[in-house]
Image (cartoon, rainbow, N blue to C red; front, side):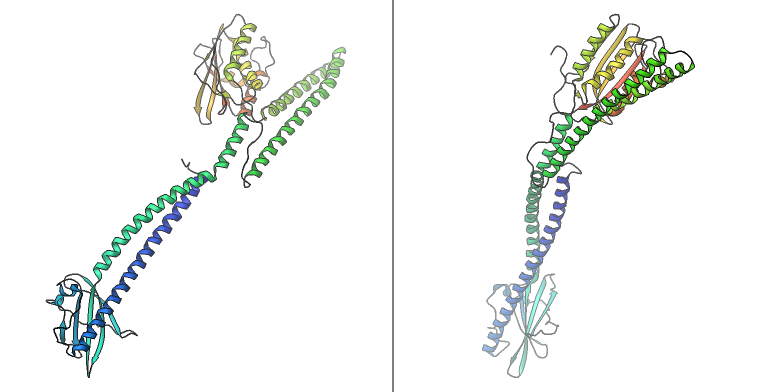
Length: 459
């Protein structure tokens, strides 16, 4: 099927439009040529009949001789559209065919051409269109005008029939050519579809590079994509190395300053301790952002979301043995998460850990798939029966380092890290009032459209 906006569809409609124009033009051209050929044949036939009458006139030497006649029986049948008449030099009628009886048929009034022939098209009293041809014949001192008329309506009817049949044949040819054009377009563009599938396989993690053999026109594109992937991998690897080097390079001086300040007393030591703490937090923040950006830029990662959430719930049950944690995958064949497994563990793990810390003893985790404005997405819902949050508190907890309860252990960076990861993957995080009475966290993430589907528990 040709998709709207595709190259194949554009080629098909362009070729189809050209075919329609070409075939319609061809149909009218063939009809005009056929009409001209029939009219020429009719004129030649009338010329022959005039020559026959001229020969009979010269033989009999009497224009009123009843033996002057034509062999064609149509000239003997009334209202046939085939007539002949002979006028003398004064325009008086001296002889005529049987078919002219009861018809007032006048001589041709047009001037003669280079061959001495005059032609005209008229309608007889019965509505039949006639082609009339006239010649002047000299018999001694007298001149006679011999006029022969042929049935032009029959010719026009034959042209109409030919036109109808021609357009039927040309229409059938056009349909066959259009189908052939569509087939050729699909076959010719098949390598592009294979290239698209190969790139999709790389994006979804089924392949490390674009593979396959392609025509010379698009083979350079496939190679450029592979070169881009290799260059991207090298850039990410260098970024990871530089992030690691920066971390090691800054941690040691900051630790020395902190230790030295902690060993001393006085206002200077307090200022140094406070400032080194700020430096440590800033370094940790930007190193974490760099780490997330580098990790999520890797093309081709995908994760079994069901298995990951199963593992997280088992871990959280051990960390929080007093909390009842229920996990329910909603669907028999859920798609995979299009991203790194560690990132999914960090996002879902932070949300689940917060739910356990603040719940009243009950936490529910569900996983489902939904289709939204961004296409297919995974929806992870984490409900708890804790105190919940107001709308103002929801805005506060998503800020880096903000904690509503300083007594509960933590750095306050968890939710903000989740938010940054969600933004990198193009997902969304919403905090709402839970049906259990506490907080509901809804995490939406992109799905891997190619590859396997997640297994169900116990499968």
